Image (cartoon, rainbow, N blue to C red; front, side):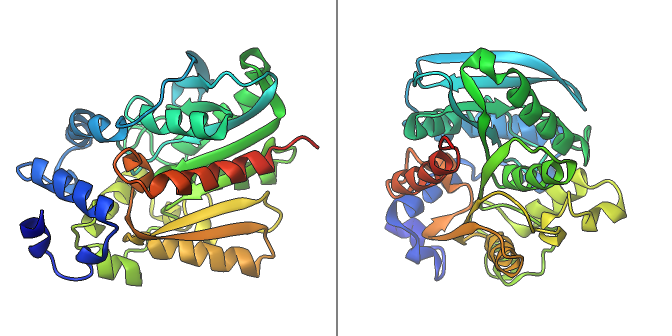
Length: 327
């Protein structure tokens, strides 16, 4: 382990020890794999589906009841999966939107994350298998997510969900989608969303930030070339790059429900969340911001390997419980 860390210059050695250990394991195991940004979208999915579930599933708790439905959405029928921890019905729910750069991952890869959310929050979690780019570019994945939130509000009672107590959560690209969906539903009126947790999200296709310059060359699990690859597949038109629903950092942030924003210290996307927090403050929005020191992008996915992430996830869950309290 010491020899591996010695290969990297500061500040890699300043990582949380658990984070450094699992990062070393990941890079050692994947040493002969071609980078995602050199692959086709399907080739990237094949790598992720073969490689990532082992890490995401570590420590994932058993959940008493899991059920799937297929619902209509912009990309066609999509899966939504209920994780019911067995709390009394009707109760609040989290609509969870997975990460993966809009191109890779699905609710199967993110099964461990959804289980952790359900167990730690005591809330029902509905994980959304939205359509992926480039087959389904912006705004189709976003519209899938909006359709899923509306479906939970209309039909969630069948799953023991109180339709007046819905929150949204997402990480990375899922945080972008969670925020953009919250904005779109605000604009449409009668939004069912009581709050949103947006974890280390990508909020604009700007690869010239200080954090991209500092950490985008790796090895911090995600790189600037990879982020460019993701954005280029998601945004098929040049005008999309400044559309506030594709890049919610450019949106009107007034009148939103409470938000919980997190950033990871050693993450190329760190500045995205920091700039979002600044804009929320300027807009007079209700929000909480946390900088998770010593860790990296996708740290929630690695919760089974990083002890410090349990208390941090508990804090996210406490926020989601708070915003969905009965009124």
